[in-house]
Image 1 (cartoon, rainbow, N blue to C red):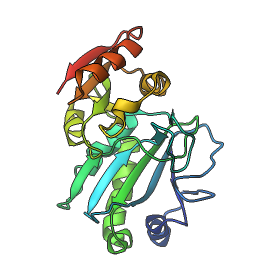
Image 2: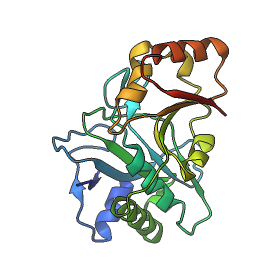
Image 3: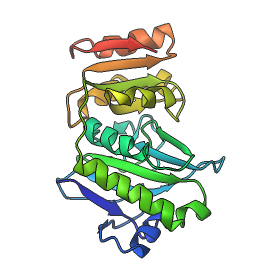
Image 4: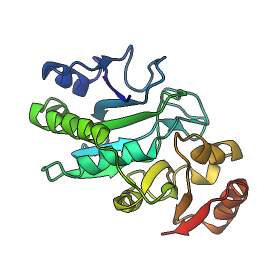
Length: 233
């Protein structure tokens, strides 16, 4: 059974609490908490960006390189493609005209349980907007309660942090880890393989978005024994 969690050190979490929802309360901030349960966890929290652009985002935790923001370096969390995609499809139905997108995998914690972040950004005004926060919470609940059907599960390499191209593919397919163009050239083999192996569900396909020839060859070679399809967008 999937659990929903908030942090009382997080502005969106405080708004969720104020609305009267009784979800699991984390023992720290959302990027660096401990969790000993075995159930998948959906964390409803704030999204921060330098632009302050309003957005609703979904992503998995993980640190592709040595730099970290919670969690361990060069370690990805456990993705859950059907659950994250189900939640994202419900977020797309929210009747507000703001960005709704999967983000590339980033920040901690890097635990052994599937964790999905469902985030609202990117200002105090939005984080404390009870109507909008309620819409996000209700979308998460619908996504958990209405499992999605997908023809396959895929991961993405390349493209920007806000993964609009990969997000657009979730009408039919379910999305696992994404490694953006900012990290893809510097990945070691362990992290490349984690994108596929650190998943609750089998990954069938790898999709590349504007990845150069040398990096593409290295990634394909690292995954050559895993019986995957490769696609280019």
